[in-house]
Image (cartoon, rainbow, N blue to C red; front, side):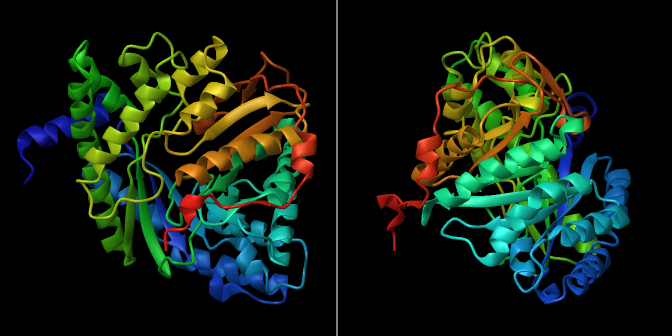
Length: 452
């Protein structure tokens, strides 16, 4: 039962602490859009998306106005296009990406995810076609996001796909070079990808999902940061309890918006993803939360422990506030999208190896990292393999969203603007991993995969 204090506290979080609903994302199945003729398939995709999501933005805006709760993004995710395109006789799936982009513009959403392939155990013709189409697709569209799942705890790691994605990321950077390789900011490589993720660039509508579903992603690093200022110097037990209570309030708001939007749109309510998603705005940073716990700069010794506790406390508090928690649910550490992470990287304290260690305990992985433009494709593939191994062995979702910025060197900055922010170019190890990546094949699934 809500009381006046709850309402006033929530209003204060919205007005002063950057609390918002980061996204409401409508998932739409496109399995019935498959067709041998790619032009027919594209038309079916456009028609179905615009029909199903016709009222998504309007409904979100109405809820914002009536409830006084900011809903920053309205988005769409669709069935992995590799599955839909597999029926097409054409090898190039760019027309399908264009259909997605035009549908997103018609509906008024800012991003549409699902130009995706699931290749953790092997690749079909459609999977290879999809991956080969990614660079051009991201260059000619504005709102399309792409993802490829290359590994899982059950299947192991598809090293042929890992090698391929290193090359695809390099090509994507090159064809979007005039925008500092911006296309790579819309491309993520996963291990253990989830089917109900509302966050871009990795959102897609899984085959186990309903025909249409509505998922909600909440945020609120600024709220947690402010709450921790009230327990300065106190034991970690009290810190964890404070984060739990705060996460409960944040997630409860997401549940309210999700249920209401679901009812108005006439589609099932899926999940609340209770991740702490930062922005480049001052006061809305996960890094600053870790520093508030007592670290001089994010990235110094103790950072991984602090992030582990934050992630755990967020999940414990949030899971009590919603009947259906899913997605990624934890703390994101996208360097370019977090003001504190940017500062720590520019100071040289937060480096790639430390970020890799942090991904063992955070929500996803190496996110929005800029590296020198001359970084070899094999090195990018090796970075992907390392992250996939962390996900595979620890039965968690991991991912890489990396930008080999054309013409940029260590110390330069990549400017992407808006929610994507800016990133300092970070160094990578110069020693080669080319022979390692060239082996191909599949890294076998770990022993813990045998749980049946």
